[in-house]
Picture 1 (cartoon, rainbow, N blue to C red):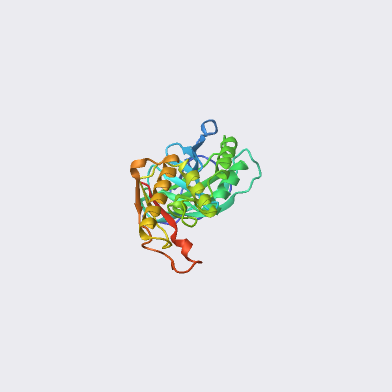
Picture 2 (picture 1 turned 90 degrees about the vertical axis):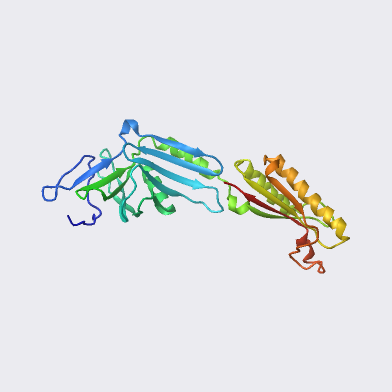
Length: 295
């Protein structure tokens, strides 16, 4: 039987039953939670990751996720029990439930279906789905069944029991750290002349690392490399670079990093990154470089 692409929208008023047409015997298989068992929960709620989940019986889980970052972000993921066999697109609509008479169905997005991968939607579509749920509408996804050419699939997110959990999710999103692991994984700390005292900017940078490590203790390796400028003797500069690195290790330990994954090296005045004979650029060489890795 020749495959035909499903045309959207295909319903004017959604009824949550299986339909069959006399000409093609095509049916709509609907997946959704009933009102009594609509289960929304805050699956993850830290300052690094906020995940709102909704169980869809017999189908899988709908997930809304936002992570710590410099910019506000959101994505929607459809975690399917049965992954797509082909590449295609699904239509995503906001559908009024039957107890909202006169409500209009609205188009939200087209969602790519990727072979053997869960399906996702980016920020704008994800926020739109959340706002429609907040109004009591049901974001619903329609596509051609990739295993049965006679069937179309309808996957609906039930808005029942949504509001309170969503408010907790929104509070979680508002508390996410305004930076990610990638923003601190490579950090340069600078020091005052002939001292182990950090500059004010570097103290703020170290405070960011502390804030992050308070939420995530899954570090695998931390490399701490100390350096100095060429002001003074090379032996003294070597010692100073080691002191800076060792002190940084101690501060990282106080933040909860296990001592045995922190490797410390002092390089002295070697490997400078700026001219040492220039008072304006020399301070850049008074530094500790922190490199963090996690699983």
